[in-house]
Length: 133
Image (cartoon, rainbow, N blue to C red; front, side, top):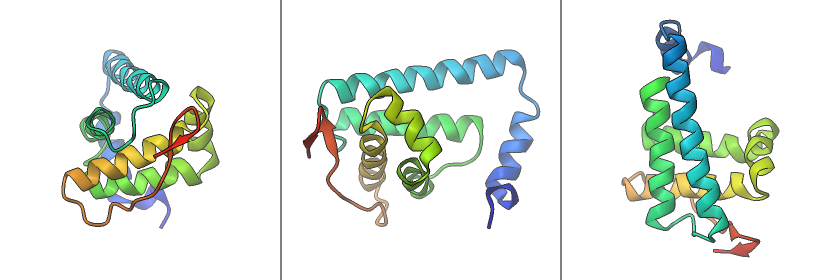
């Protein structure tokens, strides 16, 4: 099924069709702040499984949940897979820092495990500067 035919797409369309310029500015600023936290944690060598990283992943999940559609931890894990397999998403993150897409995806999986999601996956990803976790 394509994204345009999902309940999440319909909910996102319903919500965003009502947003004002101020709403979009708030969403942009919130997401920029989360992204800056990701880059800082990555640069400091924070492991994606550490509470700092899972807190960043949770902030990203909640930003989606508030602004676009309900995003429970399991759905966030599905998005994580897209962040590393879809070249458009991977490029967005990896342009900030090489390896950031995989780091974020693993932080998202670790966050889902922390929340009790049994299907959150696992793996070894760069810790920052190429070191593996």
